[in-house]
Length: 629
Image (spheres, helix red, strand yellow):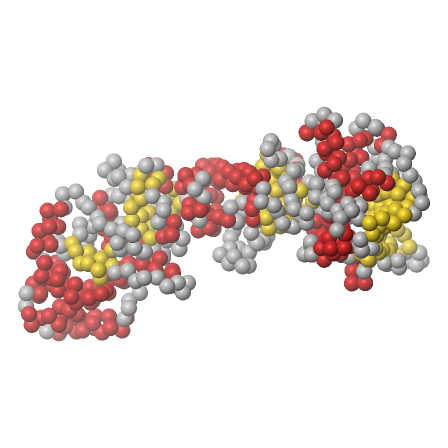
């Protein structure tokens, strides 16, 4: 074959410029692409060797930097190409030889499970070489063919040259004549780092010559294998040691250390074929609640080739503390491999991964309660986000969340199932109260009636709980009911409350006038047994806890007026009523009203609007009590 010059079969200049300058955001990617293509070529040759044993050999990919010539060569002993295949696969942009190869095998009747699992179904990865090379030269020879070797070369300017070449063994050799600003890719540390990051788990050895200077100043050249070839997620769990798990977890996680709670293997076949190895961490990192500082998503590999370490589409955000690897055999990617296409397979993988994680958490809850409780203390506030966002798995998530309660000792948590199982027969709803911490909610006067009846109340003290409970209505056909919101009905109490409202009507009107716009209503309630009063929120209004959170985030929200509920059986209410009958005691009674309101704020854990005024009023009351005046 005489040398000849041809033009690419596409709008070459514009498209090549796009490929070289715009397609990839990281120049290191070129080596990943060329190594992946070499692995594909060996896959094809190895598949052919099943029916042609004479083709079998010790497969390898070789990387050879030459600092003097300023060239980098990537070679393989795979299937190679004929001239027509070079023109077809290299001369036409976005023409994938791998895709054509698979199609041919399928047309020949090969079963899908018998086909080699190839990653090169992208078509343009080869052209990433022009990001670092001013000229690219390919010398290739087809295995199992008498066709002569072919030399292909191009400067990426719209033309390429074809010529015959001398090559004794089948395979492909790609030589990059590096640009001046790309000479770092001649350094062994740089090349080994890229291979470790992107191609460490390629199943064929990736070797590079290493020169050692002897004492007599002679040089010895040995081959160094750059990749581990050990894809731990493809092995059986029984074959993996604890040290290997710890080492891999340390490599994957952003949490630091080697200690993890549980390793989870997942293998899926059928519509979407993939394998995964996931880890539940033991401890939350300092940046768990800092989304800008924390990586999210799983590492994605396609046929052992690293694609990205933050594939957020593979796992829901409320499980972002899970770290791990998903390795897909057939996941379609876009031409650069850097951005995943919107593809139904992604959703199927995410669904399978989510189901597996939730299933393993359920097992952990049932078999090792202490370990699960420790996990939930670390990650519960993140995990509970799923109650608001994952409607598909809502019931599974409800089975897994835990809370402290009025009847548990501090620090001990119970599940919703345990709460429902312990409910007295007379209790019809699941009662809860939200707040900033256990100490504040445990002292709330709103608990008094429930304590007297032997009902338990869930303490929801995570900042996210208020937000979640706005739409978590039921569990096992039991409605959730906030004990600090809305009306509260006690059987047989209606007549008593009606009588109190009539008897103390004058005091109620006085309190409304004295407190003004601080309250929306003053009324009597049966929810109090020991305290004189408490503050309640209307059913649809934001709780004071949630209001404080929004204000801390500088969110403008409408101020909601609270309801002051009074205990008609408390002696303080009776004393204030008697005082209200004396017109000359109105200023004194007004001070009592303000102290009463501030006391209600303190007992629910809310800040006082004017602490100094409250201190003065309490001082006056103390002085009066001591002096007897």
